[in-house]
Length: 218
Image 1 (cartoon, rainbow, N blue to C red):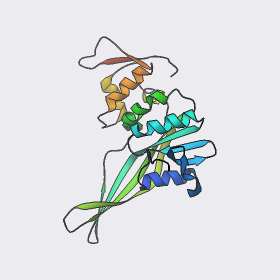
Image 2 (cartoon, rainbow, N blue to C red; image 1 turned 90 degrees about the vertical axis):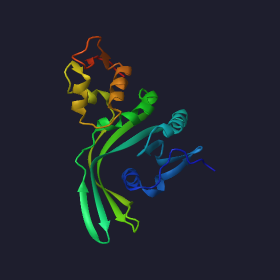
Image 3 (cartoon, rainbow, N blue to C red; image 1 turned 90 degrees about the horizontal axis):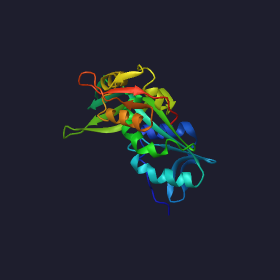
Image 4 (tube, rainbow, N blue to C red; image 1 turned 30 degrees about the horizontal axis):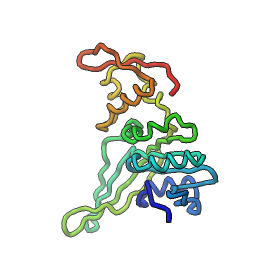
């Protein structure tokens, strides 16, 4: 009996993206001791809506067995919530728009696979509507999540995160460009530095650390 490792409950975003890749007959396929989200011939797709750390054992096994793997990381771009209180409907749209920079925490756990040619990472910005129903205790319960649209998608290219910055830039300029409110945004700078795409300069600009772009093939 395969161990269920790294899988998620079937929620709207997860199920929607799997269905875009292949039909149900190619989903939840046993591969060794693991369950692949989608398997088409020698290609495996893992849709990870949560943290990526639990995915590491799966990826190591897939690489060992010679599979081509695509890890798909959805990011909520636009979030709309519909509240249902005994038939009274109230809609609220979150002002913050998600960006590719929001995934640095998850990318950190995948960093050891970045240079592996058999593994690709795809970032997908999705617009999602959450529906909640109010219960007698006064609390709302999340009932459904529906993908309204795919706003944008790209295969991971770390150069994207610094392309629009000048050759020398500050940490503040990086954060401003990201438009991200993720508390892991500074992890992005460390990851870019570890990949050799930027280097931290010894002199600061005011209180801000300064970085310089480096031409490198990660």
